[in-house]
Amino acid sequence: MADKSDLAEVIKNIQADVTTIVKGEIELAKAELVPQAKAAGVGAGLFGAAAYVALSGAALLFSGLAFWLSVGFQAWFHLDLLPALAWGFAVMAVLFFVAAGVLALIGKSRLTFSPPEATVANAEASVAAVKSAVAKGKADVDALSLTGRRPEPELEAASPWSRPGSSS
Image 1 (tube, rainbow, N blue to C red):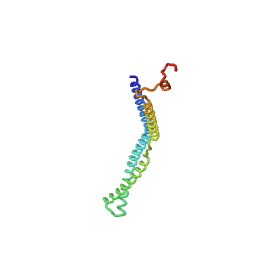
Image 2: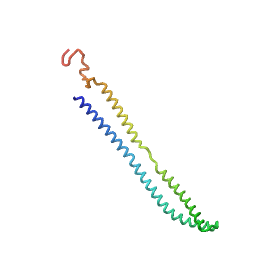
Image 3: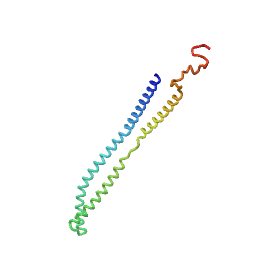
Image 4: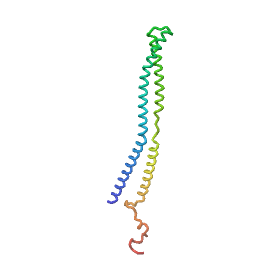
């Protein structure tokens, strides 16, 4: 009966150790990834704010420039008012798209991530430690007798013809 409780205790210890290792790995991953997530959030927020402000200002500026170009198209190409307005606003729309593309490229370059190297290295070390512990445990189990009890050191060293406690 004592052997079954010993085995149950070993299994409980293994479960507790694995739980501790997994919790430690999760905490390490959190500690490594949270600052990156915060930086990405701030970068994305700033990117969004910059885009909104730039588009609002650009809308006002480009509207004024579109009207100014429309007056120019009327004078330079002798267009009526409606075609001149269409060309003026089309030119400004193209400039809008170019500015949006530049802002998007700048924002994309700011959103770079690196893998959690310390977490991966620690996880690999933990796996190696668990593998070596399993190999040691297997070797210990292989060393057990058929009854599941560890051989007693004094009986192993004694001669098979002598009894413990008797003098030879």
